Length: 382
Image (tube, rainbow, N blue to C red; front, side, top):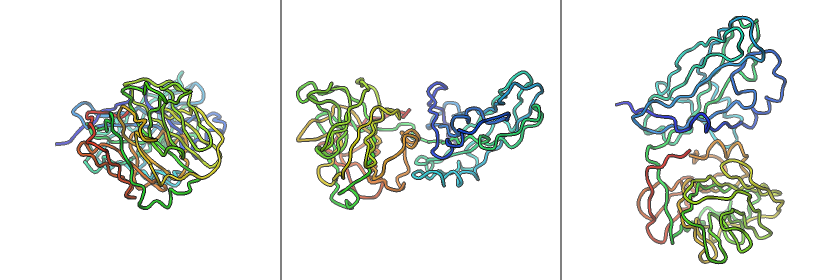
């Protein structure tokens, strides 16, 4: 029986992100031309789907003219899986796969842009079927304007004729690791040569806090090593619901005020000169910093300095030996290719049983809870 999928982003909440190299093309003057709507600012958008019996996951695509048309235009679109390999050459971390044949449909190949308007009717791409092997992805399907007939003779703008749709397929019942009075100790004793003198780092974690620490020093630890590079909430001189990166040479303090009971994607990056904090893909603060970082001793999730545990839940915890860009963080909050370069530790934390959490990168940095954690089911990453 074929499984169906449904979209879990609303039109307002649909995350639009720019790719590194393609966004540079947008600085050119559009002039008088026809292009895929939205690509004047970014060539990339996201569609996240999950297995269900509800209607298919669908995303709309239309064309825009840089001027109001005096005559009708017929715009022709096509799916362009052959462009995925070309796109991958511009992506330093993620290697996308074309959506498999038969897993999606286009509602139409042509759309009418009427005289007196500058936006065409929309066509849609729907994900209609998938197999269990598609869960890890990530997938992409470019949609391209191949021609525009009529429309005052305006040409198709080559740099903006394609929209790259990143499709992430998730399990219907994604899971998370609930930790209350508990934490995950990470084994960094094997394959740790990349972690001993780090000049570039990225941490990522999806976190939901049940309650912030109410006793001094008011610290709830997220991920990392105390005294080296630690992402945490609170401090003696900091509100317990604000995040900071604590290093051996100063702390980068975020501006966001976090709420309990709400999921956040929190990330920090270090490129050898600057620490950056991101909340849900948005830059929250920066701090100048230099030096190397040693993460080979005491790396934990939800713990530091003999305690300071976080009362809440985690999933999608990650460690990189490179500084990810904001675009890369935005593109992959819900899942990631474990084989990506410079990926040192990936704990998806969706085992759903037991106390041992696998490092999906294959580096052997297993995360183990002191007591069996509470496994939370039925989540949808948004």
